[in-house]
Image (tube, rainbow, N blue to C red; front, side):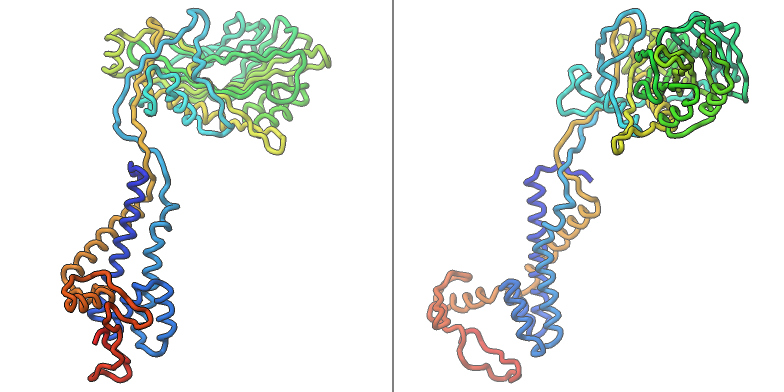
Length: 549
């Protein structure tokens, strides 16, 4: 549990804890001295001399005193030592930390500049994570970065507020689109049609496309080209609707290919709000790779993903069975499950360097969430002066690169499951933002509703430790005050105070007091400490003597 206390207060609490425990031990010894027999006061007084004196007294009294006195001395030594180190012993369990308090919310509107043509992306919301790292954690970190939140208060924590939603459509159909050509429609009993764009650097003859339905929700497509590119350009792929789209642009270009990645795997995420407050959250994770020859496709894909799946196996078979000519050929394997779309596309080309047929490929997983119309959030509505939601096709809001790990100088694969999980997590998280994250095309502003908390320094203390310290302070304090109230002073005072009280009556002074002591004569203020004679009427084996004659 977090305790918002300054350092000196935490140290004071531990000091008080140690103090009352020491007082409780003295209280226990006081009770023992009243009821524990002839040696009980000796145990109490020896305790006042410290550990060495207690240890020596225990050693030199062994077999000469009752066992109960030895046990009492041992328990006193152990308890005293434990009380003296308790506060230091728990210190490693108490760690400095930061806590959050003063919870409220903030409606932030941030202006963004963009061109009215082409796709819109937010450069501030791009980051890189290690392959397999938490995608949502990275997205929350981006959206909560105070550097991009206008007028953010220093030290305040901003967390995008989630929004409850219900899924409105859970199956989609796909309309294929190639460069300058419209392809066939892939039906999946969907309640919404999306356009699947596969953009390659040459024209294709869509009318000659061979579409094979493998199973329900699975298709193999082969499309011949009408031209051949002079060089290899990465494939552009996207899923588009009349409201929202997520399109992964390409950048790498080469005249000769190799086996492996051509660019870092990435996850692109966007979210759109319709005029009826429907939410479209779309996330696509894509991996681009190439093969230096037809025969190397298996090795190239294994180096990239470290595993194989239905689409990769089907593509390998299609490549081996295809007839490659001087013209390019586009091969695609598509799997559509509900609103999850897997597309593996490869096109062929002749290398100008090796004059071999090579392959440029793209594997993309797109996950889509479409919600039912929602009640308009009054906070968002007030911030936008009651204006209705406008339809603005967004492309990319957040980009996350998945950096492959390096082990002993060897780049490790990025598993397909990692990329699929990233798409699912990102789309679910953005859908949960609902209207609380909205880009207004008309005003060119991003509206975001944040839950805010202020930071406060303190300590993280285990709950069990906090309970134990609080309970022991209460019990020890009660025991201490109870013995002070109920027990006679003879069972609580030190031996020096007892002596000073006897002498004070003679000197007409108050005890305890500072007194002169003569070490050679062993006397206080001229009064001998020991009379030199045993008191009568006692057990001769006890060797008891009076302190003052």
